[in-house]
Image (cartoon, rainbow, N blue to C red):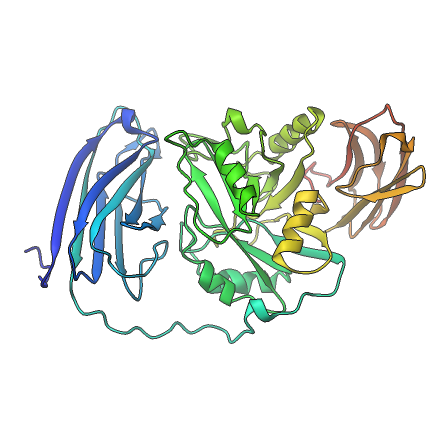
Length: 453
C-alpha cells in the first residue's frame, strides 16, 4: 500500500511514460476519474533529472477539474507534489470541492533536452478522508483595498508591474512581497505569477491606503512571456487549437485588461525556456505595451536590445508604451531595479493601467525625468501627440536626483539628436521640426552607460 491510508470512495491511478526531445513544448494530458464523495486530491510527478550540457529539463503541472482550471505549478525540479481539497491547496492551485468526474492533469513540457530520454511517473490519488479545519493565516490588519478611497490626483505614482510569489517559482510569500513594496515606498505593486491567479485573493487583502495591489498573471508560454493586468480571472496561456498569441492579446483587451510583452529579448532556450519573444503575429501585432527594463539593466534580459526593439516598432508607426518590471522572485533585493513612475488622476487600478497604456510614465532607478513639448499653442506630456499642423515643437526635459557624470540624451526616431552633460538637477531644451521626427523620448545614463530612468 506504499504507506498510504486507504479511505472509502478512494481512487488511485499511476501513469508512466518516456519523453524525448520530440516532446518539448507540448501539453500532455492525463485523464483521471475522481469518484463521488472524494474530498482530497493528491498529485505527484517525478522524472529522472537529466542534465545535458549544463541545462535541466523543465516539466510543470496544470490541473483541470470537470468545470475548468484548478491551478498550475510552474516550478523547477524533478519532483512535484500537489494537494487540493475544499479548504486548501498547494500554492499555485485553487482550493475547492473535489468534483466527481474526469480531471485532466497536464504535463507542460517547457524543456526536454535532446538525446536524453526522460522517464516520468505521474500518480493521482483521490480520497474521502476528513478535512480538518485549518487556522486562518496571520496577516497584517489592513483596511480592505476595495474600500480605500482613491488618492487625490492627478500626480506621479511609483510602482512595479511584474513580480512573483510562492504561487509560482518565487521564494517569498504574498506578505513578503507586500512588505518589500512598502519598504521601497511603492504606491502600487502587481502580482503576476506564472500561469496562475491562485495567490491574488491573498495579495489583494494585503493592499491598503498606502499600497495599491494590481491583479494579473504572467502568460508563461513556450515561445514568449507576457503580462496580463486588470483581469483577475485565469486565462488559458496555451497557444494551441487555433488560439494564437494574437487572440490571447485581443481577449485580454476585450476583458478590459492590459497586455504587456515581457522581457522580449531575454535569453531563450535552453538558458531560460520560453523567455525570448518569438511570436511573429504579435511583433507587435495587437500589443501596444512592451517591457524594456526587466530586473537589473545589465542582466540576461538584454534590456538594451529590448529598448532597440521598441525603437524599431515606434519607427514602424506603432504607438507603443514602454514599461519596466522587477520580475522580483525574492532572490536578490540589492539589484538596482527600474520602477514605473505613472502619471494618473488617482491611485486606482483602472487609472494606473489606463495611464500605462497611454504611455504617461517614465522608468527610473532613482532620478526623476520628465519630458514635455509645446507647439502652436498646444502643450503635451509623455504619451501624448502633437497635431501635425502644430509646427515645430519645443521640447523641454526636466530632471532631478541625477548621479555625478550622468548624461541626458534626446532620442528622436531612434537616434540621439542632442546630448547634455548634467548636474544633479536642471532643465534642457531642444527644437524638433515637423519633418525632423515622428516621436521622441529622453534617456539618462550613468558613467557606465547603463540607463538610470
